[in-house]
Length: 80
Image (cartoon, rainbow, N blue to C red; front, side):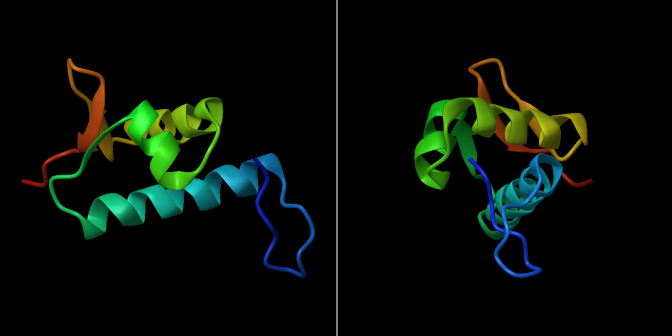
C-alpha cells in the first residue's frame, strides 16, 4: 500500500507512508479508549494488506504506544 504525498499527490515514500499509517492508527487508539485489535481486525478496519498492518502495529508497539497481549491483540499501553 502506498499513500499520497501532501506535496501534490505524488506517491509517498515507504517511510512517509508508514509514518502516516502509524499516525492514523495511533489516532484510532486515542479516540477509542479500551480499543483492542488483532492484526486481522486492524487489517479489515484500516483496509490494509496484512504485512503493512503488522508493520504499523509492530512499530507502535516498538515505540511503547501499544502492547500485544497473550491472545495476540494490540491495545494501548496504560497511562499512569
